[in-house]
Length: 260
Image (cartoon, rainbow, N blue to C red):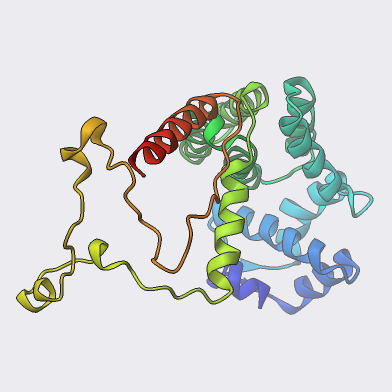
């Protein structure tokens, strides 16, 4: 199932499969990571069938060197993530290159760097996401060593960037809220009214077009469903760009209060 999900177009012969199973020692987490490393390497080399010879020549030695203790992969990727989150660019660079030197697929690391930018920096510095994505694309187009330099640049930038997980927390909170079964109706004034009947039913009636309002803000307008009080999913920090976002949100709230 894991193979079909990660790389459905690549075949693994029976002997190679037995060696893979022996290597992971019954650890499902190691299996998924090993398969991702294996299939990414096969894809980059345009290999359609993985046999024992392929494992020995291109994968096994690298994985053993990188993951001698079995759990080192997870420990090292955790150390990289936490070094960036902890704003230590030198430690982050160290762990990045420990993993590269150990044979980790650089595109796996690139994806993790994008994840760090989204989860741990977020809107405190939106440029971090752009830089992480660009590093991923540079590696895809140029390979090593230029691609590894791009990953290094991204890791340094992310390490020194302002940190915030506010958007990540908001994402998890609203996802859980909606997932609990909320199915509230769209307020009538926010509904689309493409037909005459819908207009007769007052769809879209009394909607206030923000661009026609002072400062392009319809103070006091409600956008949540009628049966819900406004919920503050997103709580910006005072760091980086989010300090400006917080200032703007507080100003808009003051405008709402004046309208009541």
